[in-house]
Length: 626
Image (cartoon, rainbow, N blue to C red):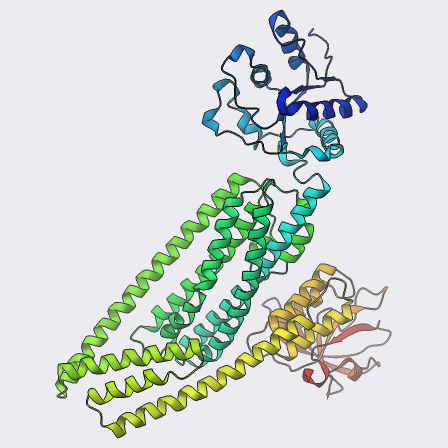
């Protein structure tokens, strides 16, 4: 029979820097009726070392106070009792709970002696089991009382940072700054996604129109996102300079922010890059152009996922409950979807995920470069063919090169118009001169430049109108932004307003809030139909109507209506708004109901007797939102 256990907890510490915390923990834990072995100065050394080791062996848990420089080991190993205690606890496989004081830094794994090298693993990989919970909870309670000392407990991340009011405020401040960063980046991703969709439509249609219409709006939204990010970048960087005692990787966070900054600075280049892909006259097969857009969309998704994993990395040592408000906002970033899933909190897993995403991104970039190489090769062949054809009709090689120079000038002019929103008169004069040098008469050159000028002015006017529309959309986003405390009617009204001005993503945000509300007055089956209508890319088989949301309690069913049905006619008369609806027995209804494929089937039905009333919402705003 072994010796009876006399102690629950053994506290190991260095007197220099660790005594106050050890005393605090001893006082609190003994008040909570734990048997604690604490001040062992009288036992350290001589024949008493066996008694000290016996106490460690008897305890279930060993608290190791990690004060500043506590692991700077002494030259005389026999006198370094802090090291000897840790080594003995490791040898006997005790449950070690590290308590980290402010300014403590863990040595690299290879820097610790062999007998305590495994201590590093307790910083990250301790395995929880049930008997530890009461002791760890008691430790956490003691630390909460001793808030002024500035400690955090990382064992199993059961009670992770923050503990004190000051620390919680610091976490809230950092999270608020990262919220601003994420909102700006989500806005940028949203604008880029819309541009890529327009580019695909242009390539498939063999016309630049869809892309040319979308490009000015993209540039406007990019500038707005860039401005928001700039202020968020400054605020977050300032915060990092003034607060450096949180358990986060400040250097890694700065690299993350600088990478985003560079990405947004270079985002203007997306327009001329895609413009070339969308130009029907560009010598490249349609299949290759679509492949390029597919790869750009893959690149877009991977960058979104990298952002998500980077944010998880920033907050991996922060208590989940301290990030509740942040996660609620992140859930509304519809283009940063990885943050909607369960978060990764293990640093090694985050590193593996980050590495995998970077490898995927490198592969996509490599594939895009291969396609670009093919495009450049095709362009070179086309240029060579142009030289050959012009030589056959009698144009000298000098004239051919001047014509090619004029075409390059024209490409530069288009780029300047896109960036400056003005006609570059000097470049237009140079273009005319190059045309004349290539063999055109002055009248022919004037005619060609005049036609280009007219088209460019029309494009600038359209761009100005689109920018004004984008600014109006920004005002609407701000005015009708969905709030978690909006009632159901207001939320749906905001969704209708956004739908009336063709802002489906913003309408979707309203339905997202409704879905989170999880109310029987607007259940998921009704929201599914509403979102199918909101996000529909093609023509729907109906225009307007009312959506069936729920049955009057206590009814749970209806003879002819299902939740999510769209009613468009009553007695062959249009039912555009719920005021047009009537529930009289014998009425006939035209109904559209989604099938398993997500398509709408048309049905007709007659109202029988004794049916419950239904709750309805309009699918269009009265007056079309005007």
